[in-house]
Structures are given as structure tokens and as C-alpha cells.
Amino acid sequence: MNKHTLYITFDGLSDPLGQSQILPYLCGIAKNGYQITILSCEKEDRLKHEKDGIEALIKSLPITWKYILYDQDGGFFSRFLYIKKLTALAKVVISNHSISLIHCRSYLSSLIGLKFKKKFNIPFVFDMRGFWADERIDGLIWKKNNPLHIIFYNYFKKKEKQYLTNADAIISLTYSAITELEKKFQNCFIEKKITVIPCCTNTNLFSKEKLIQIPELAGIKITDYVIIYTGSIGTWYFTKELIDCILVWKKHIPNIKLLIVTKDLIELELILNQYSKEENAIIVKASATYKEVPAFLSIAKASMFFIKPSYSKTASSPTKMAECWAMNLPIITNSGIGDNDLYFNKHKGGILINDFTIEEYEKACINYLNLSYQNLNYRQIALSYFDNQTAIFKYTAVYDSLTQKGVF
Image (cartoon, rainbow, N blue to C red; front, side):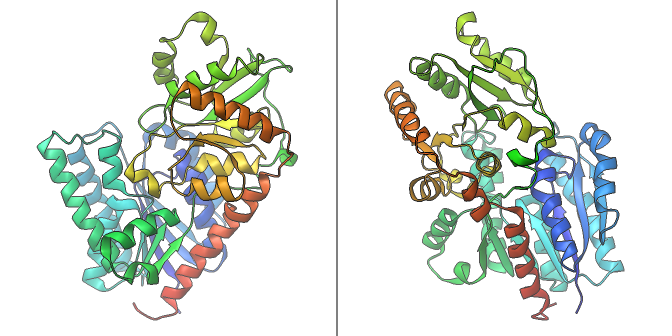
């Protein structure tokens, strides 16, 4: 049985997502008996800091890593140049090895997987990661009044249908996305080949019992009631609404502090400039590597983040949810995102708000304070639904189902 697979991603292994969502899965699949060739797009500055660590991690595993350099500030047409380069790399790999399947992360990479599926009948795994084209519109990256952007949108919606139809296996982050797809396509071909694998985390790394060091932060005292936000600023995340909510909560929790851990410190400053010195006094800023995040989470009482509500976000699974629950933190966020309603209502993962108003912020604070007295085990949610080992098991099962069918 041939078990050499090709994995293609536009996210770099040196990116935060590569560290949390790609490498752990692929290392686990490799340990389960697969030889994997990874093709990725790497940003030069991040690659410089992370390359040695990545190579050390995969050194003893049957993993080969090839990459091209990628400029995230390049225009859309430059993306097609990167696709061309990755396609050329993929062609060399396929020429030199008997590849049993091609696993493509998101829509751009799937252009390559679909091409070689049609040309060589190599099984193609469409790891959709969400409704990518709709995310570009909903996030205002593509504008509805820009004719070129609408051409791009229509092109990738057409491709989306081709990916779903031609893929031998589909990976979805949420059950909500499956519901949307079944409504749209009105037949059962989706259900027969789709697997739900939400964004999972390393629950050994994200564990209060495994912390090596807790950070000392200027601006935070031991008596402060810390609410934490981790991750990107802007596009999808409502930072201003987050701060407004914390200012409302201060009436009920006078010693509250909002700790924002992000690499987007310039973007954050632009938002903070809208607030007074007194309002800014409750906000503490920090930056952290992926491995440092658990230590920052350990000093918080809860995590809070708000995501722009939109159609495309029904297919979203924020990585930070798994990380916060693994650290036994309740989460305060908004409803209508991915499978949030399931995890929060059925499993009591925290508090959902329905709108970004003072009344909703007040209500959320009262509900949260009541919840805080219940001594719930939030880590169990992560262990049951968001553990990396669960994701690795599911991915390996998908790989096994394709390689054992002998469809290649």
C-alpha cells in the first residue's frame, strides 16, 4: 500500500497557524505511518526565526518540506504567480514519487489539487477551512462595487463547487457549514464524504499544570481581575466593541484589566487612540510567541473576543477557543459564529452575546458573574472536542479510507 502524500498550503509552517494547526497534525499523521511532502508559502521574516525549530521538529519523521518565499503585501495577481510556483514544485514531487493523495488547505491550494486530480486521478482532499470567497467579501477584502473583485468572487465560487464535487474527501471546521452546503446543493454527495474537524489545540502545551513560567507584566497587579484577548487586530475581530464591553464591565468589576496579546501592536494603537487616558488605563498590551500564549492565558479569569457576524463565519472555528478552554477559561463571545451555539448552550463554554450594545454587555457581565460561581470544568470541552490527538485520529482515518480504496 502506497502511503506517500502531498500536502499543499498557502499558510506557512512558520506562521502562527502553521505552528498550531498544520505542523501538529502532519507530525501526528506521519507517526501513524504516512510519508508526507509539504509544500508551503513562507514569509521571509518569520521563516528566519522559525526555520531551525521546524526542521528540528520534522528531522526524525518521514516528512519532506519544500517552500517558496511569499510576500503577503503582494496583490492578487501575485498570488497566481505563487500558485504557478507551487504547481511546478508539486509536478516535480508527483513525477519523482508515487503519490497516494493530495491534501490541500483552503481554496488557492485546491486549484493545484483539482488540477492533478483531473490529470492523474490522484485522490484530492479539500480541506476547506471555511467559505473562503465569502470571507473575502464579508471581510471587505474584496469590494462588491469593484468589478474585478466580483470576477474573482464568481470564479472561486465556481471553483468551490468543483472542489466539493470532485474531491474524494472534504474537511469542514463546523457542522453549521455542512448544513449550509446541503441547503445549497440539495443532494447527499456532501454528507457521504465530509468530515468535521474543528480547529484543535495541543492540550499538553495549553495546560496550567505544565506551565514553566508565568509572565510578569507592567500594568497588572496580583489583585487585578484580568480578562484576556489573544490574536489578530482588525478585519474579523471587533476590538473597539471588546474595549467598550470591558468599560461597561468595570462598573461591576472595578479592578478589571483587559490584557491584549497580539503582534498587531500598530493597529491596536490606532484603536486605543480613540479612548481617553483614563479608559486606556484598564488595557495592558503584550506580544507573545505561540509557545508563550499558555502562560499569558494562565493569569486571566476569562477570555473575551467578538467576531464580525456574517454568512461566511458559519464555517469558522476560532483556534483561540480551543486554547482558552484547554486552559480552563470561560469565553465571552458573540452568537452565530460556527458551532458556537452548540458548544456554549449545550456544554456551557461561557457567555454568548446577541448584539453589540450596552444592554447586551451589561447582561453578559451579570450572566458571567453568575457562571463564575459554578466552578465548571471548561478544560473538559477542549479535551472532548478540540484535542490535537482527536484531529490527528480523524485525519488519519480520512487518509486510510482513500489509500485503502486503491482509487489512485
